[in-house]
Length: 222
Image (spheres, rainbow, N blue to C red):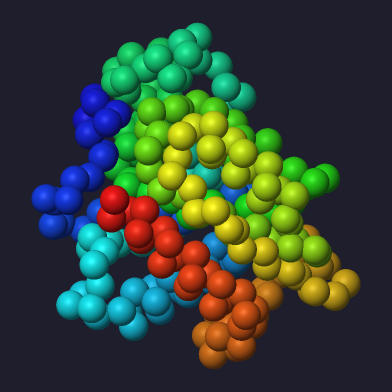
């Protein structure tokens, strides 16, 4: 558990690797959990429709990661994360636990809202606690907002590149259209993303997620 590089997978490993779908919003209320769950359902549908014998990808399992389940104070580690190679080297228990948790995943999908042309400070804080736990792992970005959250996605991608993650070049933007839907999202009210209705929402973007996911799996396999 101490070695933060132990989460790195190898081609010889045939057991499923864990992929985390990170809910980038910690607001109360929020729409991020609904949207990340919808993204998860799209990826699960892709997984179900891709028989193992027809895929060259490592077996994988998908898991939602809610930052609210991992409360972190504003970054307070005295050490420089890029110099730390074992979770035992961190000073604080909350950092050691976060390190061990993130180390258990082989890659990540970041689902982020856009706040004032950027992504949430809480997401940046969670990222900044670590370095080697992220380094070298594939990453994909899905943003959402009244205009799709593209500026948040671009800013987040720059940071993930700085962490030397293997990034899917193109992100996906989910536009929450109309004032009524934006009000629902801001209040954390149901957006109708589940069930049959959820399959009729963001149809072109669903296809985009599938294409980006194929690239993600290529990176996972390398």
